[in-house]
Amino acid sequence: MATKPTNPKSRTPNATREGWQGWDEYAPFYDWENARTLGRRDVAFWQRLAAQTNGPVLELGCGTGRVTRPLAKAGVNIVGVDRSAAMLDRLLQQLPNAKSRIPIVRADIRALPFADASFPAVIAPYGILQSLIRPPDLTATLASVARVVASGGLFGIDLVPDVPNWREYRDRVQLRGLNGAAHLTLVESVSQDRRHGLTTFEQRYIERRGRQRREHRFELTFRTLTVPQMTRRLERAGFAVQSVLGDYRGRPWDERADVWIILAKRV
Image (cartoon, rainbow, N blue to C red; front, top):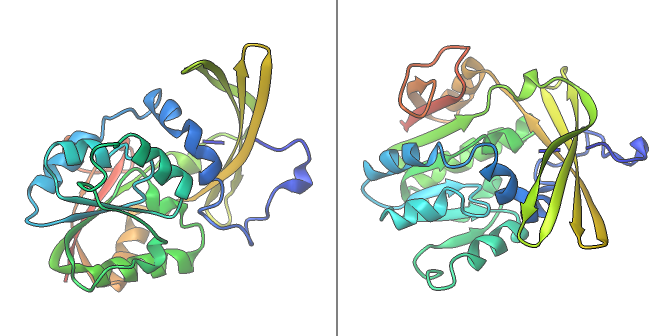
């Protein structure tokens, strides 16, 4: 996640910012960072959920395929959609012999390019809906999902609850390590816009290859809603919440839970 530019005036105001901004720049580092943080601890959950589905499963924000690839390997009929061409390029680079097996579509999740009722299940892993940083973005996405999921179909959402509780700081070294032949250092800053429920991670990746040194700077912004707030929005979009879980093993949710998983049914 993210570091403040040297010139604070260069930062894009949240009022004009799009939630998808920063993800193309993040693509070369996404797998490296997540292997050291989240890893694959949520993958088995999505495998179990998808195994109960009779038909194709649509994954929103499939990115580099952290969830997509192991689900496809497990035999899940999965379709991935993501707006970031750079993220999808990295996914396809890891599937040189399996591109035809995993349909991957570049599109905006606010306007999914699929036929009505074409999926018995849609999944939104690891906070992807939190990248929808303006209320109309979430409204459009939920309406789009409601259109493409079949009646009685499942919509699984995973939210990251600790994002709005992140303490603000500047230029903190978060991670160091090798990424192939390069040595990476992640320097991160965090800022909060509590009025709008937004958290911005400003990241600076310092890449060293021998005597060569490069810096990569970008921002990622996330919006967090509470479980009751998200439930109301799902209901307005035509879903009925079936269960709310507090971890990837199925423990019931409470406000102290590490993750917030909402499983809803298309009415």
